[in-house]
Length: 460
Image 1 (cartoon, rainbow, N blue to C red):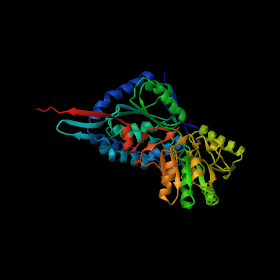
Image 2 (cartoon, rainbow, N blue to C red):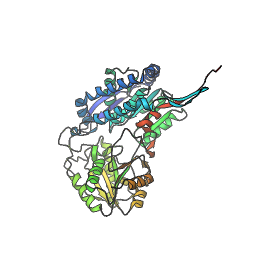
Image 3 (cartoon, rainbow, N blue to C red):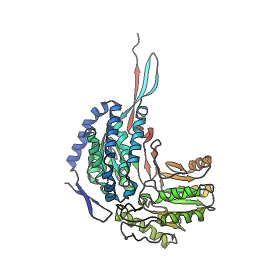
């Protein structure tokens, strides 16, 4: 039985797009087609697969003028920021550039008697479940290297960004990637779970909520299907006494508020050394007060609505609870705040870790700022979290940043930057943020399996 998926636009609450889901039978048939197509795809020369994937990436880029307003309608990002093609292309291009080396055989040794080596073998069929907040960039993180490595890919995108998978698949097909090699699927949760439980896939990469990650693990239980999970975050920033204050404020507040705070590695907590605290707070307030909250189709808008009313409701609830427990709000309600998807960005002080706003993922335009005395206090607070995706450290001392970073339970340590995904580094997390890793050489390792060859030569 099919269901109708509806993308509700945060701009005005209207239905922007609808699509019918596949039935169980149709979904399993699509997975079978992907499996049948995989061996021929993997048999193509690596450079041919690279060229086809990059042609697909370029075809997506050619649609950017249409994609940017479409994203504003679907998830509320202001058009002034120009979409995601820069990062989309950068990530795919990096993975294409390292593919020959990353996927090369590992030569263990050869002598007169034996030849030994390890090959990287594609898993087979890879399911990519992508989120709505950066719908193109998060999808390409796995789609590009999975295809390049010789897997076939099935993409299930979030309902909030319903048209993204369709756009990507059409573009890749137009560039010559076979239809059964890269498929966009419209699936409900039950059918997705049935496919995973039925071993339709050899690997699943999921980016989304902790609850969604648990559902993926439950569906895969007993199947031995590999799963990569990027789940929640509560990323901290720590400003030390020798930091470049202006740069720290500008970057951390942008990291907290850009995309209406809906960033996987957005800054949700800031700890400032006490000597800089007052100046940091004043500068942060001034930045946020300069934002214009409004319709994302307006080029003057600098912060748009949250992607869905229910997301904004969660952030409002966290703010209200914190205020009731003694926190101080520093940003007056903005004219564009409608009490629904359009939410005033907020800075909170007098916060503590008993408050949900400093403990639970907010995924919205709110940040709590706390004063700290030293590195030890900052480290303890940064580690007082169920999540571990990134941490942003601000200091002029690279050795100090490395020492503090070593003590922080996180997937990535930034020094003097934040909220950026470097495709040369492994994108990974710890604790409730998930497991596995994308991009970099390690991303290829996770999308393939090792196969060892121990070949004894016939000697006379």
